Image 1 (cartoon, rainbow, N blue to C red):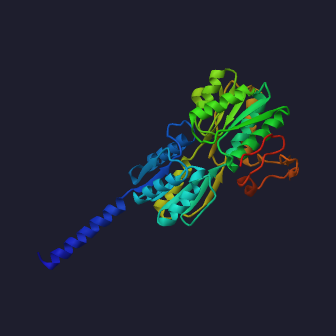
Image 2: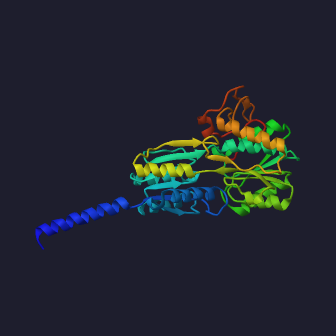
Length: 357
Protein backbone atom coordinates (compact mmCIF):
# COMPACT_ATOMS: atom_id res chain seq x y z
CA UNK A 1 0.00 0.00 0.00
CA UNK A 2 1.36 3.39 -0.97
CA UNK A 3 1.65 6.38 1.36
CA UNK A 4 -0.95 8.14 -0.83
CA UNK A 5 -3.52 5.36 -0.27
CA UNK A 6 -2.79 5.27 3.46
CA UNK A 7 -3.44 9.02 3.75
CA UNK A 8 -6.60 8.71 1.65
CA UNK A 9 -7.85 5.91 3.88
CA UNK A 10 -7.13 7.94 7.00
CA UNK A 11 -8.97 10.93 5.56
CA UNK A 12 -11.98 8.75 4.72
CA UNK A 13 -11.99 7.21 8.20
CA UNK A 14 -11.84 10.65 9.80
CA UNK A 15 -14.68 11.80 7.57
CA UNK A 16 -16.84 8.80 8.47
CA UNK A 17 -16.04 9.29 12.16
CA UNK A 18 -17.08 12.95 11.99
CA UNK A 19 -20.30 12.05 10.16
CA UNK A 20 -21.16 9.37 12.71
CA UNK A 21 -20.47 11.79 15.57
CA UNK A 22 -22.61 14.47 13.96
CA UNK A 23 -25.47 11.99 13.64
CA UNK A 24 -25.26 10.80 17.24
CA UNK A 25 -28.51 11.62 19.01
CA UNK A 26 -28.53 13.97 21.98
CA UNK A 27 -28.97 11.79 25.06
CA UNK A 28 -31.39 13.09 27.70
CA UNK A 29 -31.81 11.38 31.06
CA UNK A 30 -34.50 11.57 33.72
CA UNK A 31 -34.26 10.55 37.39
CA UNK A 32 -37.64 9.80 39.02
CA UNK A 33 -38.48 9.51 42.72
CA UNK A 34 -41.51 7.29 42.07
CA UNK A 35 -42.75 4.86 39.45
CA UNK A 36 -43.85 6.19 36.06
CA UNK A 37 -47.25 4.65 36.74
CA UNK A 38 -47.88 6.54 39.97
CA UNK A 39 -50.72 8.48 38.36
CA UNK A 40 -49.34 11.75 39.69
CA UNK A 41 -45.97 13.52 39.92
CA UNK A 42 -43.68 11.03 38.20
CA UNK A 43 -46.33 10.13 35.63
CA UNK A 44 -46.43 13.75 34.45
CA UNK A 45 -42.63 14.07 34.32
CA UNK A 46 -42.57 10.94 32.21
CA UNK A 47 -45.24 12.41 29.95
CA UNK A 48 -42.80 15.27 29.44
CA UNK A 49 -40.06 12.79 28.52
CA UNK A 50 -42.35 11.10 25.99
CA UNK A 51 -43.16 14.51 24.52
CA UNK A 52 -39.41 15.09 24.02
CA UNK A 53 -39.15 11.80 22.13
CA UNK A 54 -42.13 12.64 19.95
CA UNK A 55 -40.90 16.17 19.23
CA UNK A 56 -37.30 15.34 18.30
CA UNK A 57 -37.64 11.84 16.89
CA UNK A 58 -34.31 10.15 16.14
CA UNK A 59 -32.36 13.31 16.99
CA UNK A 60 -32.80 12.57 20.69
CA UNK A 61 -32.49 9.44 22.82
CA UNK A 62 -34.07 9.46 26.28
CA UNK A 63 -33.33 7.22 29.25
CA UNK A 64 -34.83 7.15 32.72
CA UNK A 65 -34.53 5.46 36.09
CA UNK A 66 -37.60 5.30 38.33
CA UNK A 67 -38.03 4.74 42.09
CA UNK A 68 -34.70 6.39 42.98
CA UNK A 69 -34.57 7.25 46.71
CA UNK A 70 -33.53 10.76 47.64
CA UNK A 71 -29.99 10.74 49.02
CA UNK A 72 -26.78 8.85 48.32
CA UNK A 73 -28.34 6.35 45.93
CA UNK A 74 -29.56 9.19 43.74
CA UNK A 75 -25.98 10.40 43.38
CA UNK A 76 -24.90 6.94 42.22
CA UNK A 77 -27.67 6.77 39.62
CA UNK A 78 -26.90 10.27 38.30
CA UNK A 79 -23.21 9.43 38.01
CA UNK A 80 -23.98 6.24 36.08
CA UNK A 81 -26.25 8.16 33.73
CA UNK A 82 -23.54 10.76 33.09
CA UNK A 83 -20.96 8.04 32.49
CA UNK A 84 -23.45 6.45 30.10
CA UNK A 85 -23.19 9.44 27.79
CA UNK A 86 -26.10 11.64 28.85
CA UNK A 87 -25.78 15.21 27.57
CA UNK A 88 -28.64 16.55 29.70
CA UNK A 89 -30.09 15.10 32.92
CA UNK A 90 -33.34 16.14 34.62
CA UNK A 91 -33.44 15.28 38.34
CA UNK A 92 -37.06 15.53 39.32
CA UNK A 93 -37.40 15.68 43.09
CA UNK A 94 -36.44 18.18 45.80
CA UNK A 95 -34.23 15.71 47.68
CA UNK A 96 -32.00 15.30 44.63
CA UNK A 97 -30.65 18.82 45.04
CA UNK A 98 -27.30 18.16 46.72
CA UNK A 99 -26.63 14.94 44.76
CA UNK A 100 -27.23 16.90 41.55
CA UNK A 101 -24.72 19.59 42.57
CA UNK A 102 -22.17 16.96 43.58
CA UNK A 103 -22.39 14.97 40.35
CA UNK A 104 -22.51 18.09 38.17
CA UNK A 105 -19.17 19.19 39.60
CA UNK A 106 -17.63 15.91 38.41
CA UNK A 107 -19.15 16.20 34.91
CA UNK A 108 -18.82 19.86 33.81
CA UNK A 109 -19.72 19.00 30.20
CA UNK A 110 -23.08 17.47 31.17
CA UNK A 111 -26.01 19.82 31.69
CA UNK A 112 -28.26 19.21 34.71
CA UNK A 113 -31.77 20.47 35.47
CA UNK A 114 -33.08 20.08 39.02
CA UNK A 115 -36.80 20.29 39.77
CA UNK A 116 -38.05 22.34 42.77
CA UNK A 117 -34.62 23.10 44.21
CA UNK A 118 -32.66 26.32 44.57
CA UNK A 119 -28.96 25.48 44.17
CA UNK A 120 -27.46 26.36 40.80
CA UNK A 121 -24.05 25.95 39.15
CA UNK A 122 -22.63 26.73 35.73
CA UNK A 123 -24.06 23.45 34.47
CA UNK A 124 -27.06 23.18 36.83
CA UNK A 125 -30.39 24.92 36.25
CA UNK A 126 -33.38 24.82 38.58
CA UNK A 127 -37.04 24.81 37.64
CA UNK A 128 -40.37 24.51 39.35
CA UNK A 129 -44.01 25.42 38.95
CA UNK A 130 -46.13 27.77 41.02
CA UNK A 131 -48.27 24.94 42.33
CA UNK A 132 -49.58 27.26 45.01
CA UNK A 133 -51.69 29.00 42.37
CA UNK A 134 -53.48 25.73 41.78
CA UNK A 135 -53.84 25.22 45.54
CA UNK A 136 -55.56 28.58 45.76
CA UNK A 137 -58.18 27.43 43.25
CA UNK A 138 -58.58 24.13 45.08
CA UNK A 139 -59.04 25.92 48.40
CA UNK A 140 -61.66 28.20 46.86
CA UNK A 141 -63.66 25.17 45.74
CA UNK A 142 -62.99 23.14 48.90
CA UNK A 143 -64.22 25.87 51.23
CA UNK A 144 -67.57 25.87 49.46
CA UNK A 145 -67.88 22.09 49.08
CA UNK A 146 -67.32 21.14 52.72
CA UNK A 147 -70.37 20.52 54.89
CA UNK A 148 -68.46 19.59 58.04
CA UNK A 149 -66.19 22.67 57.70
CA UNK A 150 -63.23 20.34 58.15
CA UNK A 151 -60.74 20.06 55.28
CA UNK A 152 -58.00 17.47 55.47
CA UNK A 153 -54.56 17.97 53.92
CA UNK A 154 -52.02 15.21 53.34
CA UNK A 155 -48.54 16.73 53.41
CA UNK A 156 -45.48 14.92 52.08
CA UNK A 157 -42.50 16.66 53.69
CA UNK A 158 -42.49 20.01 55.58
CA UNK A 159 -40.51 21.90 52.92
CA UNK A 160 -41.38 25.38 51.59
CA UNK A 161 -43.12 24.02 48.47
CA UNK A 162 -45.59 22.03 50.57
CA UNK A 163 -46.05 24.75 53.21
CA UNK A 164 -46.84 27.27 50.43
CA UNK A 165 -49.51 24.95 49.14
CA UNK A 166 -51.14 24.49 52.54
CA UNK A 167 -51.16 28.24 53.14
CA UNK A 168 -52.55 29.07 49.70
CA UNK A 169 -55.33 26.51 50.01
CA UNK A 170 -56.24 27.65 53.52
CA UNK A 171 -56.30 31.37 52.68
CA UNK A 172 -58.71 30.83 49.81
CA UNK A 173 -60.90 28.32 51.64
CA UNK A 174 -61.17 30.70 54.61
CA UNK A 175 -62.02 33.60 52.29
CA UNK A 176 -65.20 31.87 51.11
CA UNK A 177 -65.95 30.02 54.36
CA UNK A 178 -64.89 31.74 57.59
CA UNK A 179 -65.78 28.62 59.61
CA UNK A 180 -63.42 26.29 57.80
CA UNK A 181 -60.75 24.34 59.69
CA UNK A 182 -57.72 22.53 58.25
CA UNK A 183 -56.37 19.28 59.67
CA UNK A 184 -52.93 18.30 58.39
CA UNK A 185 -51.36 14.84 58.40
CA UNK A 186 -47.72 14.46 57.38
CA UNK A 187 -47.00 11.26 55.46
CA UNK A 188 -43.21 11.81 55.18
CA UNK A 189 -43.20 10.32 51.71
CA UNK A 190 -43.83 11.44 48.16
CA UNK A 191 -45.20 8.09 47.08
CA UNK A 192 -46.43 5.31 49.33
CA UNK A 193 -50.03 4.26 48.58
CA UNK A 194 -50.46 2.47 51.91
CA UNK A 195 -49.32 5.48 53.96
CA UNK A 196 -51.33 7.87 51.80
CA UNK A 197 -54.50 5.80 52.19
CA UNK A 198 -53.92 5.62 55.95
CA UNK A 199 -53.50 9.41 56.12
CA UNK A 200 -56.72 9.91 54.18
CA UNK A 201 -58.64 7.56 56.45
CA UNK A 202 -57.30 9.29 59.58
CA UNK A 203 -58.50 12.65 58.23
CA UNK A 204 -61.91 11.21 57.36
CA UNK A 205 -62.21 9.79 60.88
CA UNK A 206 -61.45 13.30 62.18
CA UNK A 207 -64.42 14.70 60.29
CA UNK A 208 -62.85 15.86 57.03
CA UNK A 209 -65.24 15.70 54.10
CA UNK A 210 -62.76 17.32 51.69
CA UNK A 211 -59.18 16.07 51.28
CA UNK A 212 -56.29 17.79 49.53
CA UNK A 213 -52.99 15.98 48.99
CA UNK A 214 -49.38 16.80 48.24
CA UNK A 215 -48.45 13.16 47.73
CA UNK A 216 -48.29 11.42 44.41
CA UNK A 217 -50.49 8.33 44.33
CA UNK A 218 -54.21 7.93 43.75
CA UNK A 219 -54.63 6.08 47.06
CA UNK A 220 -56.33 9.05 48.81
CA UNK A 221 -58.80 9.20 45.92
CA UNK A 222 -59.63 5.53 46.39
CA UNK A 223 -59.97 5.96 50.17
CA UNK A 224 -62.38 8.86 49.70
CA UNK A 225 -64.36 6.92 47.12
CA UNK A 226 -64.72 4.03 49.55
CA UNK A 227 -65.77 6.38 52.37
CA UNK A 228 -68.57 7.91 50.35
CA UNK A 229 -69.32 11.61 50.59
CA UNK A 230 -65.73 12.92 50.62
CA UNK A 231 -64.41 15.38 48.02
CA UNK A 232 -60.89 15.10 46.58
CA UNK A 233 -58.64 16.85 44.06
CA UNK A 234 -56.14 15.28 41.68
CA UNK A 235 -52.49 15.96 42.50
CA UNK A 236 -49.91 16.69 39.76
CA UNK A 237 -51.98 14.72 37.26
CA UNK A 238 -55.68 14.85 36.42
CA UNK A 239 -56.63 11.57 38.15
CA UNK A 240 -59.82 11.86 36.09
CA UNK A 241 -60.65 8.18 36.56
CA UNK A 242 -62.02 9.22 39.97
CA UNK A 243 -64.28 11.89 38.44
CA UNK A 244 -66.86 13.26 38.50
CA UNK A 245 -66.75 12.36 42.22
CA UNK A 246 -64.87 12.23 44.59
CA UNK A 247 -62.28 13.99 42.40
CA UNK A 248 -63.91 17.26 41.39
CA UNK A 249 -60.85 19.00 39.87
CA UNK A 250 -57.07 18.75 39.88
CA UNK A 251 -53.71 20.42 39.53
CA UNK A 252 -51.93 19.24 36.39
CA UNK A 253 -48.17 19.68 35.98
CA UNK A 254 -47.27 20.31 32.34
CA UNK A 255 -43.50 19.82 31.95
CA UNK A 256 -43.41 19.02 28.24
CA UNK A 257 -42.82 22.54 26.82
CA UNK A 258 -39.99 23.16 29.28
CA UNK A 259 -38.32 19.82 28.60
CA UNK A 260 -38.52 20.36 24.86
CA UNK A 261 -37.12 23.90 25.09
CA UNK A 262 -34.21 22.91 27.33
CA UNK A 263 -33.34 19.95 25.14
CA UNK A 264 -33.36 22.23 22.11
CA UNK A 265 -30.99 24.60 23.91
CA UNK A 266 -28.50 21.76 24.44
CA UNK A 267 -28.77 20.77 20.78
CA UNK A 268 -28.25 24.40 19.69
CA UNK A 269 -25.37 24.96 22.12
CA UNK A 270 -27.27 27.84 23.75
CA UNK A 271 -28.02 26.17 27.11
CA UNK A 272 -27.29 28.37 30.12
CA UNK A 273 -27.99 27.93 33.82
CA UNK A 274 -31.38 29.46 34.57
CA UNK A 275 -33.99 29.63 37.34
CA UNK A 276 -37.53 29.04 36.07
CA UNK A 277 -40.67 29.33 38.20
CA UNK A 278 -43.82 29.43 36.07
CA UNK A 279 -47.48 29.09 36.90
CA UNK A 280 -50.94 29.00 35.39
CA UNK A 281 -50.28 31.88 33.01
CA UNK A 282 -47.30 30.18 31.38
CA UNK A 283 -49.14 26.86 31.17
CA UNK A 284 -46.85 24.96 33.54
CA UNK A 285 -49.71 24.61 36.04
CA UNK A 286 -53.08 23.51 34.74
CA UNK A 287 -56.45 23.28 36.47
CA UNK A 288 -58.20 20.05 35.56
CA UNK A 289 -61.83 19.97 34.56
CA UNK A 290 -64.14 21.11 37.34
CA UNK A 291 -66.85 18.46 37.29
CA UNK A 292 -70.62 18.74 37.54
CA UNK A 293 -70.37 17.69 41.18
CA UNK A 294 -69.37 21.32 41.86
CA UNK A 295 -72.25 23.82 41.87
CA UNK A 296 -72.31 26.04 38.78
CA UNK A 297 -71.72 29.28 40.70
CA UNK A 298 -68.72 27.79 42.54
CA UNK A 299 -67.29 26.51 39.27
CA UNK A 300 -67.70 29.95 37.68
CA UNK A 301 -65.98 31.76 40.55
CA UNK A 302 -63.16 29.18 40.61
CA UNK A 303 -62.57 29.68 36.90
CA UNK A 304 -62.56 33.45 37.42
CA UNK A 305 -59.92 33.03 40.14
CA UNK A 306 -57.88 30.79 37.84
CA UNK A 307 -58.01 33.37 35.08
CA UNK A 308 -57.03 36.27 37.35
CA UNK A 309 -54.05 34.28 38.62
CA UNK A 310 -53.07 33.46 35.05
CA UNK A 311 -53.20 37.08 33.92
CA UNK A 312 -51.32 38.36 36.94
CA UNK A 313 -54.23 40.57 37.93
CA UNK A 314 -54.36 38.73 41.25
CA UNK A 315 -51.62 37.18 43.41
CA UNK A 316 -52.41 34.15 45.57
CA UNK A 317 -50.64 35.74 48.54
CA UNK A 318 -52.19 39.20 48.80
CA UNK A 319 -52.52 41.22 52.03
CA UNK A 320 -53.73 41.80 54.56
CA UNK A 321 -52.25 38.58 55.91
CA UNK A 322 -50.70 37.70 59.24
CA UNK A 323 -48.43 34.87 60.26
CA UNK A 324 -49.73 32.10 62.49
CA UNK A 325 -48.53 33.86 65.65
CA UNK A 326 -50.55 36.96 64.76
CA UNK A 327 -47.58 39.06 63.67
CA UNK A 328 -48.08 41.18 60.57
CA UNK A 329 -46.84 39.75 57.29
CA UNK A 330 -48.48 41.49 54.35
CA UNK A 331 -50.26 44.84 54.55
CA UNK A 332 -53.46 45.54 52.66
CA UNK A 333 -52.65 45.59 48.94
CA UNK A 334 -49.17 44.12 49.42
CA UNK A 335 -48.18 40.85 47.75
CA UNK A 336 -45.57 38.30 48.79
CA UNK A 337 -42.17 38.47 47.15
CA UNK A 338 -40.66 35.38 45.55
CA UNK A 339 -37.82 35.20 48.07
CA UNK A 340 -40.22 34.83 50.99
CA UNK A 341 -42.35 32.31 49.11
CA UNK A 342 -39.33 30.25 48.06
CA UNK A 343 -38.19 29.87 51.68
CA UNK A 344 -41.62 29.81 53.34
CA UNK A 345 -41.34 28.15 56.75
CA UNK A 346 -44.43 29.47 58.57
CA UNK A 347 -48.18 28.99 58.56
CA UNK A 348 -50.56 31.87 58.05
CA UNK A 349 -52.91 33.00 60.81
CA UNK A 350 -55.76 30.59 61.45
CA UNK A 351 -53.89 27.35 60.78
CA UNK A 352 -53.33 25.24 63.89
CA UNK A 353 -50.49 22.94 64.85
CA UNK A 354 -46.75 23.25 64.43
CA UNK A 355 -44.71 22.68 61.32
CA UNK A 356 -42.50 19.64 61.98
CA UNK A 357 -38.78 20.28 62.04
